Image 1 (tube, rainbow, N blue to C red):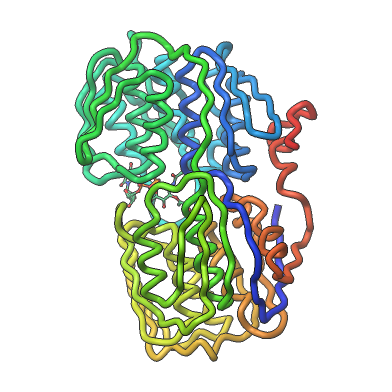
Image 2 (cartoon, rainbow, N blue to C red):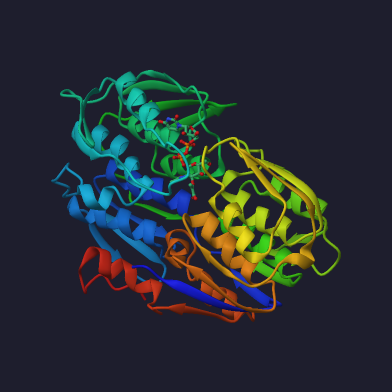
Length: 442
Ligand code: EPU
């Protein structure tokens, strides 16, 4: 549903928020439940659009889902269908994560081409080649692929040209049920991948990691251990709160359950002038002192994450100085920067995957109307519109709900004045997507 937001600035944030469970760690771990013939309890799952779509896809495969206040229980003992709904699968990139586990367990998958934010070409060739290395045959049809391995997958050696996050996750899941020892070379060691590895190990899969090489001892039969697992906090949300505090020159604190790699971002923010302290699962973020814009070059972990490029571009736009961004992961992740102009950011130069601001001054930011195009970019437009005096409108704000749980409610609880139209509650999404009144999320 299309939504829009009206903010009233200037905004000063104050208080504490709790970071939700990680979106990009939850998606592969939910998909990995298809490797089990038992029940799995997942705690700290965020109520997000992308996650509800994936859960809806699993429900359509006959996975039984039940919710309580802590999380979700998935019972995969009676999965029947191996075809994914074209329309639902094309809504999210995460639908590709069903390929590996479903193929490993049922030896055949009909996968519609996945969707997701329009931030680049987003091919799935690495995923498909990895499945071929594990013995699958791939047939390409218009808008879908059929992957099959009549006698089941077999262990193999996979080498990725680039350390793709979801392709590494797919390969790890598939190799978990490919009997024998598989290796994945040049895999992604991003925090979200390591969280999936922790989950698979908890389920009894032996995985060793040496640098960017994974060694997996595949099982011959579906996993049967009854596992309970709490998903780590969303480090991209925590990073976004750092940018939010900086843009509004505020002092806030963020509570988290577990973070893996955020040091690069914290170091970057400190160099901008934000004081950050980490103690007892709280991050104290003090951005009340002078801030200076700092250039960004995104890269694979442990470099600066592409998913925080947009919020930190907004932080730069709200600071003084000349700065530069190089986006090395996605070809088309600057839509938000083009929109910054509508909030008074002048002197911008964009060329391919690079952009530059000359003589930026925080004082030029003014209220205005912007339009969101993708998850992180839309969030950065909301954050920047908190700064100037007056009322700003953000059209197509619904993108934020794909990846940030109750973000507007959280901002308002810290003192922002944001109204969303229409004002439907995000927590109803699970019921809506799966069309069952029994699947209540409290
Ligand atoms: N690539 C290929 N072929 C493939 C797969 C990837 O050429 O088969 C290329 C991509 O075009 C890109 C690079 O490899 O240039 C890296 O892409 P990657 O596969 O790592 O991205 P992804 O797995 O599709 C995940 C996150 C993204 C995040 C990227 C990079 C999920 C569901 N998505 O995407 O998150 O930007 O890793 O860290 O985990 C977001 O949350 O806003 C988001 C876009």
